[in-house]
Image (cartoon, rainbow, N blue to C red; front, side):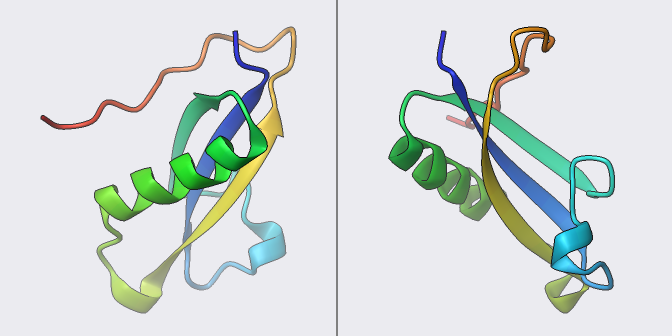
Length: 81
């Protein structure tokens, strides 16, 4: 099981970047990743494919996190065919 998680947070444009978290985000996209490079590239790719309606009213914050042993299973993003 991959130890890293790619996390893309969609946050309100009025929220400061340091305050953008899983708890304050409008939407959260989480995917497992095997390497730090895959983690960053994967989150950016999924976020670009999803699009961000709302212009300046929303922004994207991308992070990579270590999976916690006690964490619940991650629901992976599904790509449209």
